[in-house]
Image 1 (cartoon, rainbow, N blue to C red):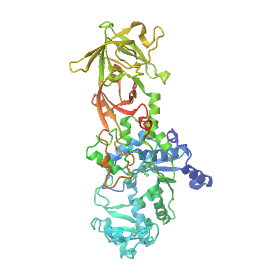
Image 2 (tube, rainbow, N blue to C red):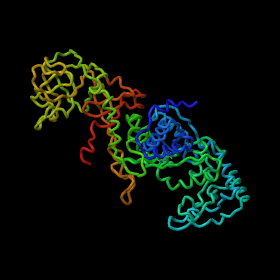
Image 3 (tube, protein in one colour):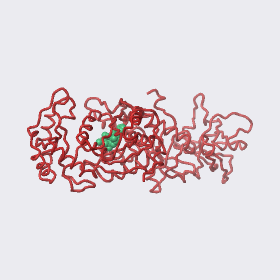
Image 4 (cartoon, rainbow, N blue to C red):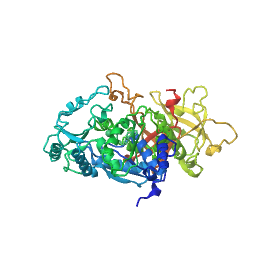
Length: 565
Ligand code: ATP
Ligand code: MG
């Protein structure tokens, strides 16, 4: 039984042209008013955020129309596909949609049916074995402005073709020596209809069918079959398949008894500074430029998850990019907007010092500890408070102290007063320097009546800074991620350049930091705002190894668009 309630846990309800078309179909009673979609990844890499756009559309549409969505592995090319990718895709889809209410299907399960259908095309004179090389075939295919040339093998008899195709299937021919082609029209203005290839020989073991097959179906032939067999009503794909639609329809039209879905094309996601191509992402992994498919700089779902993105932030982003008929590029800051919004509501505010200066509160008793009560999240009254130990020696950030403060400086400086978040007002009395002139420590005094950070007499202290008790500090590693590429538009590159020329050497900066003791309890799933710095999450693989490492998900503000870039 299909669990229809789970799939409705979220829906795609921003109006779009696809839903308008479905509404029209439903009004006409087409497909009996049913909506069945599918997400059809090829298991030749990990899923990326472009796939999130497709997943959000397919699952969100099925949910909206009380229908169903299949996860179908389009595993028709044995050479590039691996079980590792199947497992990662399963995990990523479950994570992104947030439920398991979908069928997991494999195109390879339909190989026999597709093969039998191909035999019928041959019998009816609609397909032939072409013994030309692939170079010859592509040359004879012609150009958009010039008609193609018919292959010398095009008029083989059905008997001869059946015999040859069976020999192909039995492994009697070498790879590349022949293919099975549909016999449609070599003069069609649509090149896809110029006798497209149905099957080619590949002598590589398949991740599921092993050595059973040596002929494998091409995408256009296979995809319509897969959709038809599964009873898909609306087959949603990206715009580059628009001029494949006549072929999709031609194939299914040859089988009048077959269920015939409606293909609808939408805009492909493209993001500034971001490369979305499994083949190129694989190269980054293989060359070791990144730390695997789940490196937090990667635009993969596993990378984004490790970086701290949530399923709902990615779905909201996908929905906001819109489903239309025109390709475009969206700004990377738009992706950051949706996670920042969630983290602002949900992340715990904690105090972390990244480049420490020691402060000694001279008039605070040695050995004494008090506990500052700090709100976990001022945006969320239900988030509660926690206690942070305060002692005589604390770390503050270098950037919160200035020897020669500029005008309007509210933080600490010689002789000035500042509020330590949730603790005392302190005044800097003396700056102790190292022999090389650098600052060794600051000697301060405190106002014992200002505990909690409240002004005891109404005097104004504008600056509030974070601090960490030296004795209680937890040492952590922070990983500051930036864009993987320095170039905004990776689709259009200057002459002679490739994307490899635009890798950002500063995409990862690793730092040590000193955190309040509550970070000792950090674990994957919890989210933090390091006050006045950025949002961070514990790095899951490091946590497994007992290390406190934090990944910067996103900065507090969008510094990029503010700079006017
Ligand atoms: P890539 O070029 O990155 O390898 P692909 O399109 O070859 O991607 P598939 O595994 O074939 O990857 O894609 C599965 C589904 O995801 C397809 O329906 C495809 O149209 C969709 N998809 C892939 N990339 C994007 C994208 N950038 N935007 C929207 N949908 C996408
Ligand atoms: Mg592909």
